[in-house]
Amino acid sequence: MIDRVAVDGRPAGAGDLGLAAAARYGHFTAMQVRGGRVRGLALHLARLRAANEELFGAGLDEELVLATARHALDGASDASVRVIVAERDGVRVIATAAPPHAWPDTPLSLLPVRYARYLPHIKHLGGFPQAHLARSAPAEGFDDVLFVDADGFVSEASIANLGCFDGERLVWPDAPMLRGITMALLEEGELPSERRPLKVADLVDRPAVFMTNSWGVVPVSQVGDLRIRSDEAALARVRDAYERVPWDVI
Image 1: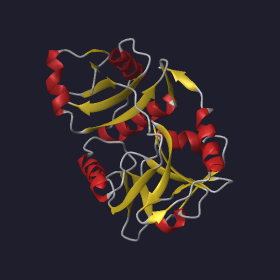
Image 2: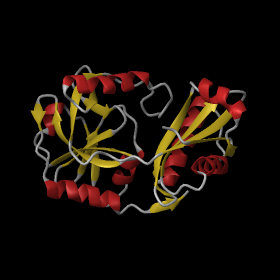
Image 3: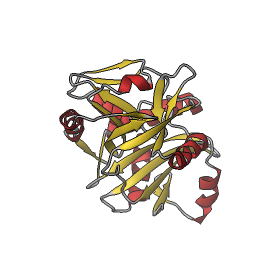
Image 4: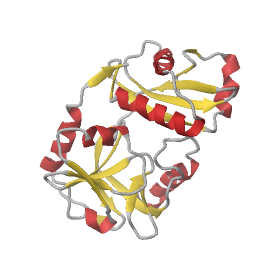
C-alpha cells in the first residue's frame, strides 16, 4: 500500500491524480530508506539521469528529485521509496512512499522462463510481463522466476539480479539486464567481481547463489529442478560486504 505521494517537489494534490494514472512512459528507481538514509544515493541519481537522457533527451534536476522524495517521506525515517520520471506536459517527477520492505528470512526458489525485458538496461515503466510471470511462479511451486534466453543463458529475475560467489569473487551473468543498485554497490565493493555467461547448470557448484535488489541479499536454494546448497560462510561474506556499504542522507 502506498502511503504518500509527492510530485515535482511538493506533496501531491487532487489535480495530480491524472498524472499518476497516465504515467505509462518513463523510468524509475526504487530504494529502501532507513533512518532517513539510503544506500547508493549517487547511483540512484545517476540511473535517473542516464535514463532521462536516453528516453527524453533531457537532463534531470537532482535537487527536484530529492525534494520530491523528501515530501513523499513526509518525515518518515523508514520507508520504501520509488521515484518515477514520466512525461506529461513535460518531464515530471513523482515519488511514492510505502512501508519498508525486506527479503524473507528463508532461501528462495526460482523457475527458469524464457523471457527478456525490452531495453533491459533501463528500469522503465510497463513491467506487466515480468510481474505476470512472477505472480505465476507460485502455482508451479516456486517463489520467483529467472529469465533465460533461447540458448539457456541466465540474465535476471523479475525484480532482482542473480549473482554467485565462488569463494574468491562475485560472478554475475554476462547478459542484457538491468544493473541493479545493490549489484553495482557489490561490484564496486571489497570483493572482486566479474561477469561471465552463465547457464542454470553452472549455478549448482557455486558456494553461494543469491539475488539482490534494494531489499538486500537473499540466498537461492533451487533453480528449476536443480537444488543449490548454499555455504553459509560464503553467503555471509557477500552479506557482510553489502552491510558495510555506507548509508547516504536523502
